[in-house]
Length: 204
Image (cartoon, rainbow, N blue to C red; front, side):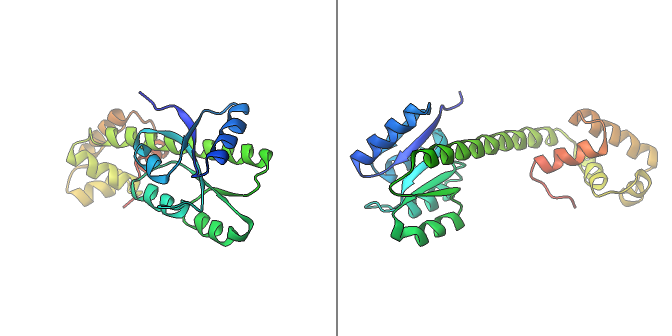
């Protein structure tokens, strides 16, 4: 079952959390709040959406949270909130992968726009991940010989060149090529290349 899409607000200040939750709810977002970064990390693998985190927090700050999320392989886009004097810190966060930063006091319009951008990035990331998993599963159905033929096809070799490379007849290569296309449910070489790229594999 797919996790609900939510804005995950991390801030140690109760009043700030309540205010952000109210504003985001009013704009139609589902919101979950966390008083500490560790509380989000405990559930990060089972949630979707985006993260809105303060930079300055006790125990674990927003930058450390971002590092930990990256280490977990999380695909949650991160927005950091910072004070005016902490903008260099926010820039560091963006260099480390944060998608945006908001300067306090936070403008409601900028908050909503940033959250919408982050959620859209998260949606695209989940789609790409699903496409990659599906493509990888389809490639796994090929036999070792079919995989060799496919790799050489994607590298741009002709049937004749593949036959020479593998020590097989061009007719045998044609048969393997047809099976590759049938198993992967693709109908052209460009489709095959896109499938291989979707699986996250480099061309030889």
